[in-house]
Image (cartoon, rainbow, N blue to C red; front, side, top):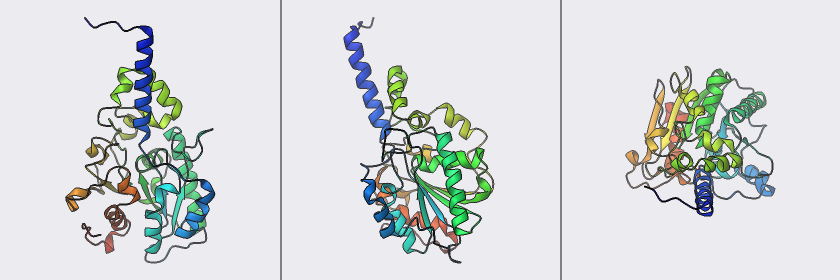
Length: 293
């Protein structure tokens, strides 16, 4: 027979579980956000979000970067955006999933609403660049959320390729820690108050069941998933992979066994992941990705 907890003890346990679940699930994204006062400076210096940019014959499609949960359009891309700009791409990034009273940290709103924001943003980029298709690169939630846009909002004809870097395609157990939400239902209430998208990315969520029903992919779009086996956020890491035609799943350690990137570093600082991203955007001119990429 299990010992009965006092009301005060039970309350402390619920609080601890809720806090642990919220803090752990919230890591699905980024380090602390920088002040947005420097956001325009960072983008100008990096050469992205330049709406006068016209894609070249070599890179005929603009690239739309989609940040992760708790991220924003600048912090997530201070490395990859300039990397792609230097290679001749027109690069754009959006903020999505904003909630009142939570500045800087975005990607928290319902994923269905975030996909609508992406829909509008893609149309804005297409109009500015005079093109009919974009390529999308997203990190974490940003690699999964565009699939909602492709599948349910008519985005497929406007997208050539989707590159997901550590995407939460089939949800996450957070190494089993999201089971706290199952064991302590009040934890789910607290997490949901922080942002609905957190529980939507939990393995087995109703959102993910609907998103993945009938297959992971839609016709006409090329998919690439870039993962690290050391991902401590979207776990198990192989749940990031997609199944279907026109899919390439990449594990960095298969290309370089000594690569130790985890969930944040793979997008923020890993040049192997960036090189694989460039290969996915321009497969005709792809070159091998190595430890020295």
